[in-house]
Every structure is written in structure tokens, then in C-alpha cells.
Amino acid sequence: MTEVLGALVGGERLTNGRTVEVLNPSTGAVLAVTTDCGPEEIDAAVRAATEAQRSWRLVAVAERSKLLRRVAQLIMAEQESLGVLESAQTGKPISQGRRDAELCARYFDFYASAIETFYASAFSLDARTEVVTRFEPHGVTAHIVPWNYPLQILGRSLASSLATGNCAVVKPAEEAPLTGLRLGEICLEAGFPLGSVNVVTGMGETAGAALTVHPGIGHISFTGSVEVGRIISHAAAERLVPVTMELGGKSPNVVFADADLDRATPVIVNSILQNAGQTCSAGARLIVHRDVHDELVSRIAEKFAAASVGPYQDDPTLGPLITANQRERVLRYVEIGRQEGTLVFGGNRLSGGKYGEGFFVEPTLIDGVDAQSRVFQEEIFGPFLVVASFDNDDEAVALANATRYGLVAGVWTSNISRAQRMVRDIVAGQVFVNAYGASGGVELPFGGFKESGYGREKGAEGLRGMVQVKTSIVVA
Image (cartoon, rainbow, N blue to C red):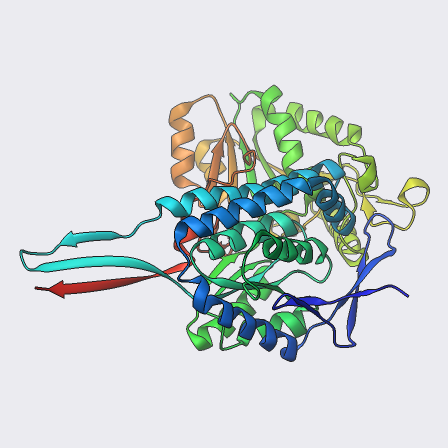
């Protein structure tokens, strides 16, 4: 019988008789069994965090910094095993799993340094009045983490929360909770006090819902779908609790006729194939000038055809989708895309042989769509790229901004004036010029406009979201 992995609460493992199976997307087989936490376990976790935070908020910044660095060191000491575990539960190629472990460590290392220079201000209002602003923690922060980048996304919000004196309750996605549980243990092994980091596993409608409405939570960090984000926002609004939301995306790469296609093509391909396209910031829309349309689409189709697909341990270009349901969702969009545009490449389910019962789909390229089409507008969350053409700069901007999302955009041009205009006019939280995404990007504030969310994580802005500002006015 498979051992049931309990939630990590106050440094102890808790089980309750209810379980959730974690599947290996590369095979469809059961990888682990975790506890399906309910209100009782959530309450215990929040109480443990509340008790720990009473003393943790008073710990000197230098000591917090030292412990954060120790976590980073321990993660890197386990990079291989954490990377394998991350890839096994998500299906991503093993090199990406290792990289995600490294980036998780970088967040703890970055915030260990950033917190040492994170000061408020003091000034004289007049000859008798001194004003001091100070940053104070929210108390207990909730971290609701998705399944696509469990280590990275947890690292970026948990490290900033602990750095600023909060304690935390983490709810990883039921599909991929294993590295979150291990990271919680690593934090305690590094010397963080018992109860400072608690990890509650289970379904969103049980564990996640109970965590969202718990009166002991002072801040919620959520990454996930717009639909679930709305539910969490409403629940938080009932209690006037601040929330950081990183939601969906349908991000564009806008390619002008003067772009360097040799430079652009591999980056555009990687932006949609990385993690099998299961990335909020995936470059899911290609908006290309008509003069270079045919050449660029041909180049991308060649790259798609050359991409290797397989189980995570083979370190392919493209691993499986996370679940059978997600695979079927992508395949349904393939049929929609056939009606709304022209299928240039892919679109097939892959099974048998090395694919076995895994959740594999070919990379898919749909050309000739318009801005009203569903495949242009809707987040598919798979290796699925759609192409639309433009004739002038105004049309390029209109197409880039034509969805309800505004997370990331890429602009490809050798004209600096045009690039500056695009950065100004494209509505997105991050705009890259002659690039897409960043190597790690730990230092770069990240978040969305429109329905891609609000608030910022990463960089120094990630610390600001985890504190409240108190102003004291002393009159002599």
C-alpha cells in the first residue's frame, strides 16, 4: 500500500483518512498519495503559523537573512533530487526541473540580500515634528500555488514573506504538491521556527477554500486561473484582506518586418513550447508583419517538427501535459482552430510506444486567425501557437491589446523608436524588446494588467506586497 504523505503543520505530519492521488503525467501512473486537508487541518496550520509569527516578527533582519541563505544552500545541495521530483510530478523535461530548483534557491538568496536594504523612511516635518514610516508584516500569509511551476512560484512568494517577518501556510496544487512539501521541510531544517512554514495538501475546493476564508490569514498570494482568482478575490474582499493575483495570459510576440528572424525564431518557439505551453506568460500569439509572415511561419513549423516529445527523464523539448483532462482540452481547441484558421503543423495526440499512457500532444501551429477567434482570445495552456498578420504599427498595437489579458509581450524590431512606442502602448506587466522572458528573472517585478491580475511579485516589489506601512508622528 502506498504511504500517505501528510500535511506539514507545526513541524509535524498530519493525516485525516482522506487522500488525493498524484499522477506521473509521463505515464499516467500513481506517483504518490497525499492528504486531502479540510477546515480542521487548515485551522491547525494557521494557528501554528500565528503562534510562530509572534516571535518571528521580532527576529533581527540579519538573522532572517542568514536563514534564507541557508535555505538556498540546502535547495542547491538537493538540486538533483528536487529537480527529478519536480519533473516527475509535472512532466516537464528533467533539465527544466533542475533549473526550477535552482531558481527557487535564487529567490531565497535574492531576498536574503534584498531584506538587508529594505528600509522605510524618517524625516522632519517641521522643527518639532519627526515622522517615521516603518514596514510591518501582515502576520500569516497564504500561498496558493499552481501545478505548472511549483518550486519557482512558491519560492518567489514564500521567501519574500518570511524575509519581511510573516509566517506562512502553503497550499500547493493537488496535481503537484511533492516539492512544496519538501521545501517546507527544508525551511525547518535550515532553522526557521516550527510553525513558520506549514504546507497543507488537498483539493482546491476543500483545502484551498478553507484557507482562503480563514480569519487568521492576513494576506493571500495566488497564482492560477482568472475564474479561481475571482472566487478568491471575493472571499478576501469579505474580510478586507489584501491579495496578490497572478492570473492567466495570452501573451503576444509582435514581429516587425525589420526583425532579426534568426534571433527571434528560437526564442518564439521556446516561449510556447517550454513546459509544454503550460505557462501563464507563454508566447501563445504570434502577431507578424505580412512582409515576413510566410518566412517566419515556415521557420517555426520546421522548429516544431524538429522538437522532441517524450517522458521527462529523456529530457525532450516537450513533455506531457499535466493531466488527461488538460490533454483533452488542448485537443478540443485543435478542432476549434481548424475551423477558425489553417492547421500548419501538429494537433495530434501521441500515445503508445514511449508515450504509453502519458498525456502527450504534438506542438500545434494555427495560422490565419483573426482577433475575434476563440483560439486568439482564450488561454489554452498547451503547446499551441496561433498566428495573425498586420500591415502597420497601429494594427500591431491593436492586435497585441485585443484580449482581456495583459501579462507579458515581446516586440521584435531593429527600430528603437518603434520599440519605445510599443513598450508604451502595449498593455502588459512586462514588455521585452528583441527578447522574450528572462534567464531566471528573479530581480524583475512580475505581474499583470487587466485580467492577468494585480500586485507584483519578484524583485524588490515582492517585498512591498508582503508588508503594511505604519507612520508614526512624534511632536516634541
